[in-house]
Length: 255
Image (tube, rainbow, N blue to C red; front, side):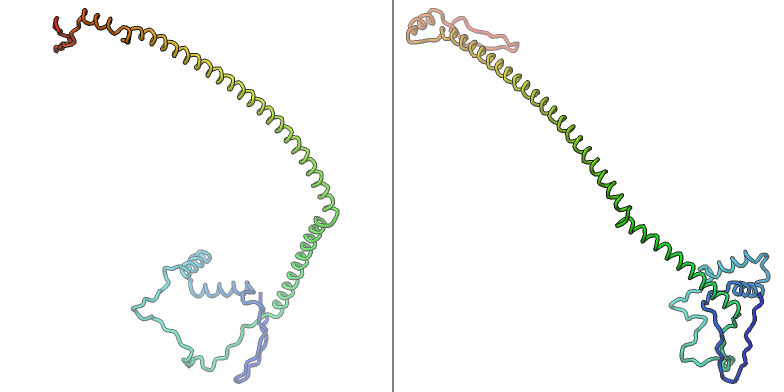
């Protein structure tokens, strides 16, 4: 695209304001053409432009070719401070803004205005739709319909809850009845077991009493003391005996 430059009449030590674009990053065609010109002047030895351009961008932004200053060595390239005077070759240079195509600028402004207008209209339409939906949900017919649906759903849920409670009550009563019957049977069984154990205990004690009564007949009492003494004298027994290594008892015939 050919650009029409604005004729500027230069005077001595005067600056004439020019029309500047609204954004610094605008006009991509102009920036692309400028980049192509710089690339063709600077790197003619590359075979293809896209690959070479990407390689230059990669090496420019990579950390391989970046020079990091060390704390011990001075920097190779210095910078001017704020107090340094301008260079002699640029002492009388007047810096003008870049020329701008008026037609293209007006076209861009008009398109930006149309874009903002359309976007504002779309946003207003979406906002109106959202507000209408919210109003219908809160106040309108949809709210009444939703309230009726919620009431019906609540009623159905309450009926279902009552039915479930009735079923749970029936199950609980059945379980309590079974548990009571099992407890009664267990109690009767334990009573029978205790009765049987008591009868066995009484029979055992009766047998012990009978045995003791039988044994008590051989006891030495005051009534049969003289008789037992005479029997012991008539039948002497020697308790002085010894045991050999085989476990045999050796007793004397006479005490």
